Image 1 (tube, rainbow, N blue to C red):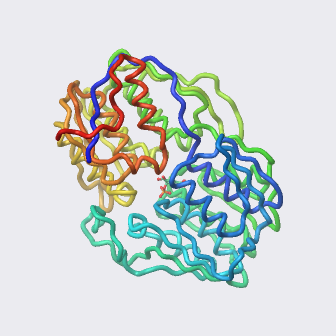
Image 2: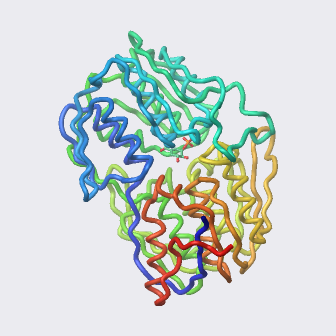
Image 3: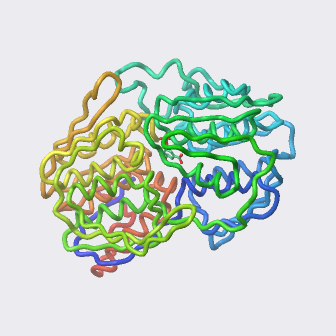
Length: 470
Ligand code: S3P
């Protein structure tokens, strides 16, 4: 079944964006490790964060998600007390759940079998298994991605098959103690850094993680908020073991910048439009896209800035004449999830946009380089991907002012789907897309939110799911 997307212009509105996914996962995990009650409000209700919530319940944590998205967590301390000796956990399609929770599980005193949906079962886990093993963890996985999801990349950017890696399901068994170590990471990955930092809470001495470039620092901020012993010096984070963590009691989670990014770019590329988004997380390790868009000439204002454990503000984006820009590899981790929507902005910018150092995109929910190149090229965008140095990849987009619609394929990737819907809304004629269900991973209200923009603008209620004639 396909869904139609009609062109739109002239929107002037304020939209509500759901709470941050990365922070929701981390707030719940940290709350689960404290004795006593933590109230998280609002908590993101999406497939990925519900996967973490489900894992917590299986681990014996009492956590109640109310209708108003308030999550009340009753932790029991650093060691979980599950109701069964071997706990079966299921991460669904959530890479963050599997990768960062594994760091905590490495320090627990029971056996865990940690499985996932086929789409996650083909994603590499060696990146966390290896450092956790170096810390003494007893963690293993499957040597082959036996349950490859349809359409998954079977090759790395340089064409090698995905071999010599470790895939879900993971088996984690207790060890006497974990060892504190120093890690110099080869890739800037917040998930890897977080798995190590969570495990470091259970280690015998301090652990240090040094990243090649800054990646999102939500775990570090959350550890500080819960009074862990953490020190940050540039790209170097040092964390010491603790016997207990202290809950702040209440945690406010701002709107997810990665979800806001779709509405920001929509406002920039739709004619005569302006969108205001309230209470958006503006953590600099997450908002790299803002800097790039500003360099592209975007009219974006950040107002009403508020300081908290995570800073947040209101963002106003207005229709803009964009021009191409170069994005350097060190900027990529600060906007790792926004490359698909940046490609959409670049498609409407005058001149060339070069996005360097993006090989990590190959191993997201789908190969996002391939999904964006094929979708945009199919709609007439001049876009190419090619090797970038020895072991990396880049994309080059040459934009123009307008496009006709086309049929798009989500590849079961939420960010590809939302990016193509935004692109389609800015096209001169109607488009269609194969699937919307994947969007529930991070932003279940996305289709309703953009559909509502049509009803605001004119009486034809379009944009929502309707079977296509294509
Ligand atoms: C995330 C980190 C990023 C990002 C993912 C969420 C996190 O992954 O792509 O959507 O919450 O830590 P990497 O650490 O693999 O870059």
